[in-house]
Image (cartoon, rainbow, N blue to C red; front, side):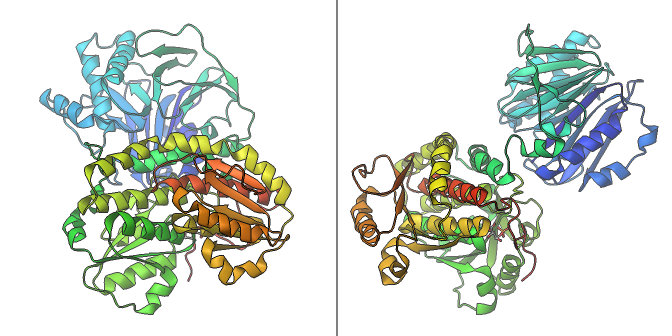
Length: 616
Ligand code: F6R
């Protein structure tokens, strides 16, 4: 995801900014840029697609005399990956340079306003609107007055709707740096005669551990030796500083001991990012700009075949339940590695959908190429912009889950669940689903990040459960319908990071074989959130208990199971049927994580596994 760094102080700015950008690389990005402000009031701007190393090679560091500058790593959202879309962006009359994380939601309206006032635009980004709006207000005031720089920014930020973390330079003030935020992280490192602004502590901790966390709708106005903080209207009288006690390496993980834990906790924001831009204006359906071109085909579709591997395959299985239920389109789910060699007979109106977090999994890529070879349209759901799968598909949807570093997929998996649920509703609304059902889904979708936050509070309970169970060597994970793919995912998580033999099964199938495993040595996780079929699940639970099997139940508070005898009960919030699997995933992610921790396993780098499987 995007990263920001800004500097003003006694050091040459360029090396420090490039170093900061490299420290933000782990977040994932597709282009980068740096803007420097010379003491002679000239801007120096360098932007490039690809790695920070190529940006570093694009200019002579030795020659740079600037002590003030800004830098950015961009993860494309608004506009394709290109040099023109990379940040910093320069304003029309050349007074300002700006880097931005976030989304300006009312950018079209503001752009039209600025076009009417003679402004030109050179990129497809919403950011360029913001830098020009600041300039517009600046030119309305007393140009070259320091206070005007601040006031113009205050006015512009009052005008915009959306989220932002910004760092801004004004040509008229070579030792000034301005930073502001709203729902996008930004902190200011305080050194001796220097300040460093960054979206992530990782870029600051090599230089100082004293920081100020900027709050929403606050503006930091900074010179080499002075930091003032303003709201969008007035000046703040007090500034609170904090000490960061992490190493630079730890800073990337924040306060979390492992990336996996960090990524589990990021899920409220990830899901908000995944759904952003996919909700219709009338709040009755979802839409997907990336696959709109295939729209006519969706009306004729008679089958969708999903291909994926591992966790992504589990997300596809969820898609099968949801799309068949809400859109009445037959769905098949194939292991990509099987599909490519299977030569499955497919009808003319079949759509192939491939799902891959990395976008580089070779089996999935080959399945895609095989489907295209045979003339089928292929859509892709991936997390990595510009990945091989993203490039090879006819159209697609990006997950916007941010870089996933822990080898075990967590946030990328739930973001795939979110996309498949949104797709089911989209297809449902194109067919027979009515307006009211559509609005109920959208409302639940908008409430989902909050409910994920509530679910994350279960971590302490689940870690205690793990204390009681970490010595068991086998587990069963059982679920029905939409909980069945989550049972599979839970078993996979436990296997891959805690090295425990675990089996996921549809709960009623248990009596056709796996029940032979049930004993006091094999506990069962049961996932059940549907009240209507709970009595059936209750019978299955009793079958387990009659064979001395312990039961850990994941359910919702509205299901009357209080007096039922189970060893553990984990209660997750209730949400819309199509989104309930997302909430049910979180406890099993925590369980696998804490089990692995207690068994002293390398959580982020489990043995024998790679993050991106680019071999067959
Ligand atoms: C499990 C896991 C793997 C991946 C699989 C596919 O935690 O991470 O099973 O889901 O290797 O990877 P992508 O989604 O990158 O194609």
